[in-house]
Image (tube, rainbow, N blue to C red; front, side):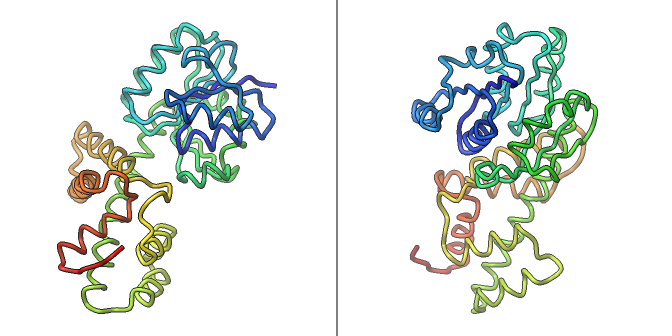
Length: 295
């Protein structure tokens, strides 16, 4: 049985690590936060003593942290402890430039790197049905499908390219669309509310229209129910992700007008409601429209 290391036991990482554990793999994990380490230990996971310790003797190391700088720090800690032939899965959503640079360093030591951001949120991670966007050596990816099937929907494990960094690029393009979709939906809901429409009716029509989707169904429900905290989609994460999209656009010389505006909207939301989830931004638009609400 493969030995797995896992760094980053937050909202996403904890669910992923638990599902790897449930699938019967020998897994040890670590997080800088004591409460997360305690949660992992309570789930019967083997607790590593440090970030570096997660890499000792493992066949596969997952890195699920918040930013590219965090990935750099993790790799700096583990690089001398990983054995040649081991595989590092970078599942955090970061800029492709981070992944490409680290792949060069690790592959020079005979360590495989798979760039594999994920999608599906906390609940997808908990249920083991994430979408996986994997890029790199396909033979290496295929050799670890047993582990990947523990965290992702087998029908949504996508091989998106042979170049490390393609996975992050796919995710950045998706996040650009997702961020602008949120902005348009928030504005539509506030416009309907200000016009005196019944929001249940409006949401039903919208969700059955040509633009209806999982995003519109989930978001309209959260807004109507005023469910703005602890739904697994914090503003900080979306703001971070969409900022990567904007930065990628700059590097490639692609103007991203709506994406940039959406990034600023999420920045304001983060400033005003740092503990809020994405849909809580609608409260800012309601206030600007003169709609008084008590949540």
